[in-house]
Amino acid sequence: MVTKAVIAVAGFGSRFFPVAKTLNKCMLPVLNKPVVQYAVEDCILAGITKIAIVTAPGQAGSQVRHYFSPDPEMEAYFHNRGWTDKWEPAARLQDLADFTFIEQPRDNRYGTAVPAMVAKDFIDSDDFLLLAGDDLLLRADGGSDLADLIARRERAGTPAALAAATVDGTQAHRYGVLSTRDRDATTHILAEMLEKPRDWQKPTCYINISRYFLPGEIVTYFDKLKPNPATGEYQTTDAVEAYAADHDVLVSPTIGTYYDCGNISGWLAANNAAALSR
Image (tube, rainbow, N blue to C red; front, side, top):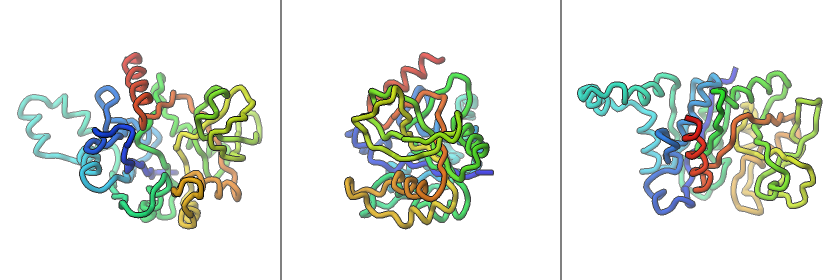
């Protein structure tokens, strides 16, 4: 049973500058909750009890740590003012999971793989979920696509899996596309990761949304990573592709609607969708 998750929130949020100089993009609100809380709640719905949040050092990281940590002085103030009902949603988060906070150093390493690399001791040899804290999946049925990911991987008997949103094939050039081979009608195995293909011919495509179920042994693949020649970044996709060359990796289509809140249009669309669903 998987009980651990690593949530990456150490990015600079350059698309949101200048406000992101002080406010971590994962703390931007979708209605009355920060984006990262949706990721945490999805993990909890999936049965995760230990969550490592990999933050930036300094001010941006302190915001996230404070949000998911007890604040007895603030709690007492709210209770004394008769605002216990307002405080309760914040207090409830701390009871649902054990949080570990890991600072991602600002050194020469940059990219999506660095959070898993710096969380190596937390992962140990255990299976874990790896996801970004600046996007979300909104579902009208109250379900969890991470829970679905875990269940489908178990049924398929693969050691690893990744969640995939389905988009119109004409939009393939905007995304990292997952090419699959079908074991059967419902079991899709990762064949190749294609970066913004311009010659995609199928009516739909699966896109990578940076939500992974990974076995502890993949840490060795992260250890061997070199900066991607094209970007100079350490990329999770490179580690997953290397692992997929040796093992089957399940591609699990999501039910929820995916919103990339790492950019302004995605964040605005998520707020609009969340408001309409109320």
